[in-house]
Length: 369
Image (tube, rainbow, N blue to C red; front, side, top):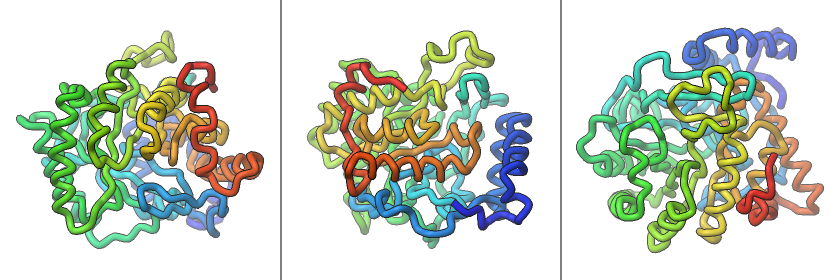
């Protein structure tokens, strides 16, 4: 990736590292805001030239130049989807967006677990609401697949109704929608993963989708904190629907991977490198249950090797976010190059051929990274 979007000084590796180190010295939420501002101002790397042909793939009818997306949570309010696309992401997922604006939980609510390259957040779906986000996105063509991650307001009397409103508002604007029922930071939200509640939710959401002008793909984002029965129930609930795919997984409430580390006792969802093995095992276990249903793998991707492992565990595409905090924005380019090499080394012609090559090992816990 040639950093053509930066001034000559900012293209220098030492300066980029100093910028990243400076951000790591800031309060995490302040650093995030500074990053969004920099992207808005055009102070970010831009991809110069096409992606390797090995990375082209199709996902639910979406033709992607590469299968790597920016995960939801980074650009909550659709402030910088185009700069992210110019960086070289094949997908950009904004949100989570709720019908009404909400401030989220009290600060501080974002914490680094630095030694483990993890992040804990209890943001609480802070966002500007449907109206503001819709106004920013209306008429935009960003150059990548645009996903809108929809959620429910904390004070809502009917979570399902909030998701229906999200579908109705964004179905004709987004390239895909994500129904986020797996954040641990909205009380009661994860209860929608239970079989009967999930059937009701999907029935309402997919009915709302059927009224849109264009059939937009709908993904369901799951938590990694699911046991075997819960995964069985989810597979059963979605089996008779025309849901387009899954995103596995959201953050975890477990602290086993970071026990004893600084900030590990903070409440909220843990993401980043410590989440990788758990989220990848759940990905493989859901792959075993849902057959060929498309799955986007997310959680702990931090290197080309971890990206390859997500595909081998059953992913059709991947997303990342937290690792960029510690490794910088050029991690995207390194992952792309690593994926292209992995495809060639496997004697394959495209990244899709990596999907599921080690699904049984990951599902059984025999594979780790």
